[in-house]
Length: 509
Ligand SMILES: *Cc1c(COP(=O)(O)O)cnc(C)c1O
Image (tube, rainbow, N blue to C red; front, side, top):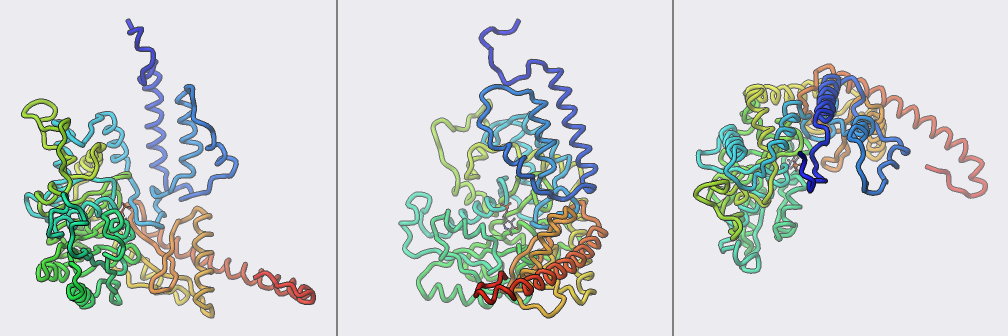
């Protein structure tokens, strides 16, 4: 008998029909991923379809089949494309089926990782401890899974701020400070650190962006000089943020030199390892991050180099006590018990978040399914692919490498000669946009040392070498088309401009 008071529940009326639809979703998912390289990387959504997203909130029910049909018909074709082998615009992972299944299973398990004596808690603790070991952090160091690299950096920088303040910052706040705190990073530092300075109440002036050398690594002499100048000025140097893998060019700061300087100066060492920290498990590339394990805090991005589906990052802290003191709060409704469901250390005492999803499950399942060696080899392969692409660029006189390829990011431009910097920017921007709209490959752009360039960020376990051959061919082909288009339109402009000149009108540029 069904309970007559239970008129509304979110469980299906017909479990078997739901089971069938769920099987269909799974079959479609497997097919989609299996053939992901055959379709376009990305395509814009037609205007008429966009308008369908203006509908008001649905008051009544709709068959799930219909809702799902929209996911397949309207969302999948217009997804970001980061799961595609020729997606290289931003440094982000390409996902995987194991991780996707794990996300589903985590939701079915349903645990809230803020607290609780559960299996999920053990998995969470095991995953952070695995990551600790993979990064070479000492026994007893702590970690917390967060939604990504930005938050992992904020966790580390908050601990740095509180620990270096010289007062009980947790209690009295920044107004109790006698001298303002100073943080240091290279001029290539990720924008999330500016966000962090703002959120931490320190302000953007608290972060000194130190110049970089020709290889885009923080200039250690300039760093030392900046610290000395701040001390003389009466501010309080607190923390050096080293970047292991910059967003613009993939450069890795000299982590050992920075660790030495931190020790000498009594400063906190934070490493933004969102791009490069995972090289620590890659046999050919591990030497690039020597010194990483000397950090006081480290931000890792698992939805980048590990290809976990979004979102999951991790902050590791050398000193568990500092980590806990930074975030722990007590509340009468949150007390650890000696028995029962609350008989476990509260994980939210290590995090700015209280409720957390079971993100650990995808990392746990992916690491177990593939093993760390596989991930290490994939990371090494992306470095080799970036170097291969660099070779293709070097071999072409009309392609210009714009920064040394340090790891997995390649910056270059199409430069057939005879163009100004502004013309080159316009020309290469056109190439990038045409390429994106062609669906063939998606790359991005950036500006380094005031010069615009195309940027290929290879963080993709599906990319093959011939995908990179295809990219270079496409850039050259589109580059030629763009030049032709410009020549034709310039000619038209000249023709149109002639009669207009008499009336004093300005010809369109
Ligand atoms: C991606 C990235 C971040 C931000 O990480 P999210 O996961 O996007 O929040 C921070 N720093 C660096 C160097 C990055 O590459």
